[in-house]
Length: 265
Image (cartoon, rainbow, N blue to C red; front, top):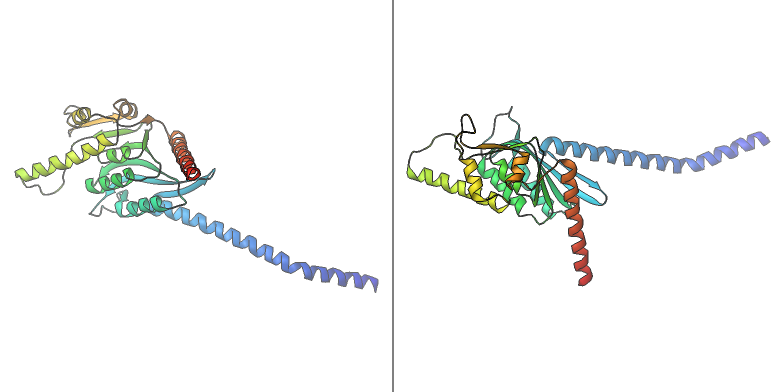
């Protein structure tokens, strides 16, 4: 009888503890499901839009990849790696408006593409109030040059290259003076933007764009990372560590200024 009473007591204790254990188990399962959902969302963002948002040391950074060819008003072939401006522009608006994101890192490896789409993206990044840093990896060619210089600070790896050349147009070209005037105005828009957002002088930039003995079948110049920094087109030579460190320093400085302003008021 005593043995049975002890057993009954153990059964009662187990029945009393089981709801709590069950709730703990359900809580752990819910947490694991939420973590899995977050991982799936991050992977989906990387796959669909070439972007990811990370948080470390109370600093949240949105990283945007501009790779392949920049797609504008016309669809590129399905086998062409492309960055679509209708994907990038809403992201930039979201980063600027988000209270959770502190800064933007732009990773660039592009052959160029649609001039107006590339310039539109570059203008948006240039006009952001949040800290922005660009990093050229592989190549920042053609309209990729304005994209490389549009951030508040720009970096390039030593092995990367940048192609500087005049505006080209595919398709039907009408041989009238208005066509050449349009080309000249568009070139001026691009040149003005590059000069405004970097330390390169206009004459050096124009000379490199008009070189005739550098490219086999084109007008222009290909420069490497060290040359890009030497002429003032890019701010510094560096890779991911240097770009992230610079961006985090800018974010900390901005937070400090905001805190001082709040104290002053």
